[in-house]
Picture (cartoon, one colour):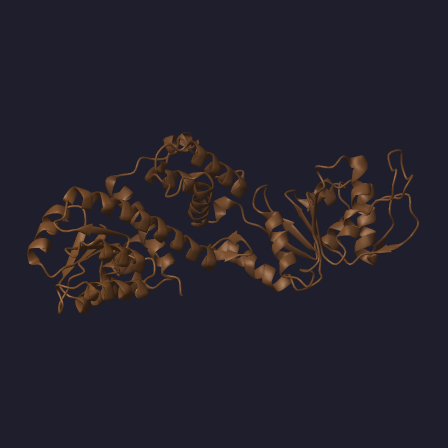
Length: 451
């Protein structure tokens, strides 16, 4: 339940607010500035209702304005609604100018207060979600890639070790797993980071043009060669050349690429001049190149030249909680892009996201969430928006106990993630004691990660 701190020395006003707001909010009341700051520090309420006229000078606004400034010093984004009998326009301007969210005058119109509170809580929750997402991105991101799961942390460790070397790298993985992003990270962490990153998909260029695209051509080398043209290997000098779908490379081009890897020089199509390039080669494929080499479709000597270091990018279905983390990050990004902030997933969607096998991996997840944001009518993205109703239909029904544990597990994990594994802070956010949170973690099988 949303926490509300009421700072007012008038017991009748406090009682009135308890009657009016007690069903919808968790209320804490204090009567002076010192207790207000202590309570704010301890519970971090979503909204604070602050009377300007506080002891020791209850007929002047200065004490309340000082408390307002002190609260905002503790948290610049704190939401404080000033409720005061000091209802002249000048005090309202001073309070709002000092950072108050809004200003209401006594006697309080409870219907107006409820509306202001609803709007204020909504804004506070949006900001809290954004800050939590920013923290998650900082904690679990690596060169624009998100991943807290052990398989992705292993990928990040691999990149850290291999990137500074000049060795060719072969990236293996299913379509949509993010092989090009891994190649970019290798480039950005390498000694070639200041040079160009040139990417080419060997399966998207006609076979008769691929050699020219890679190595360039001289004027007159073939019918349409009206001018001399540099190829991608030459363009990538001083940087990284990423060859995606390397398994589709025609055998004649494989021969020339092998020579380049051996000698770091090549000739343009139709040329005789030896051209040097120090471009680092990073290749990727979703095929089994060893099988292709055994069947003669791919040169074995080229395979061993490319596979000096091999990295396998895990499919999304093997990345555990990364699925929900990525889905929420995409939801936040596309919600902002399409002017739909504050979108959340319906509870049953979380089950569908983790149960689905994701044959298209991260790319499929990204596209589904983007479409869902466009199609969503309310504040919750449904399984229908994600086109995942079929997935839900084959999931076994949850008992009430299982549903409760699913929600609890998700909330506890998110709270621990936001607070970098600090149980005290997570317990405070969840509104439970530390022993209770420890019991929940043990019951739900949640292991606290070290901060």
